[in-house]
Amino acid sequence: MDKNMEEKKIIIANKESTLARHECHNDFEYYKHLIVSKKAENQCTVAIMEIPPRKTVFPYHYHASITEVFYIISGKGRLETPDGEKQVTAGDVIVFPPGKNGAHKIWNTSDTELLIYLDCDTTSAADATFYPHSDKVGLLIDGKPDSFFVASDAVDYYKDE
Image (cartoon, rainbow, N blue to C red; front, side, top):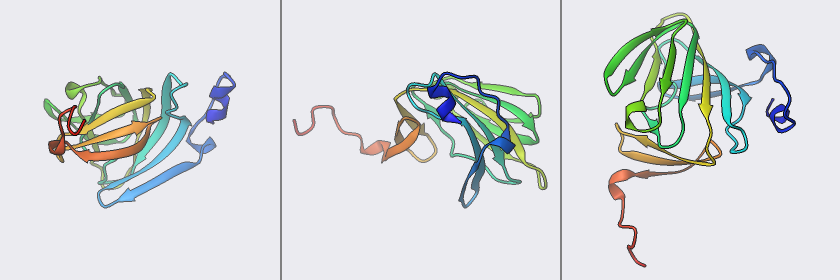
């Protein structure tokens, strides 16, 4: 689908018209139907996300330079934020600003049905992602994980210069 953005065409898509990327690692599992990729030349990325029952998508995190917006299409879930946990359900729109106040993690709380949401994000050629629960910092280039570090290993800017 991303080829259409490069050609500046209108995109009409649904999850049946895209191939889903499946990721699974312990409690983390999802199907991602990518509509518009996180390339720097795109102003936003668009994906339909499906979380299987009792699973989550990504660790609790926030971004330094992008805003994320979720629209819950179907299902129900639990959302962790800096203000505590909240229930989310079909019809909810959730906006995560860049920075610590936008930290989040979403789980599917159902035993039987998928949690499906539309994920629209602003883009940046480079972004830093912070994981407060695990003290990690990640560098993302064009939306793809590049490098991850333990934040407490940070060094002074002029070290060894």
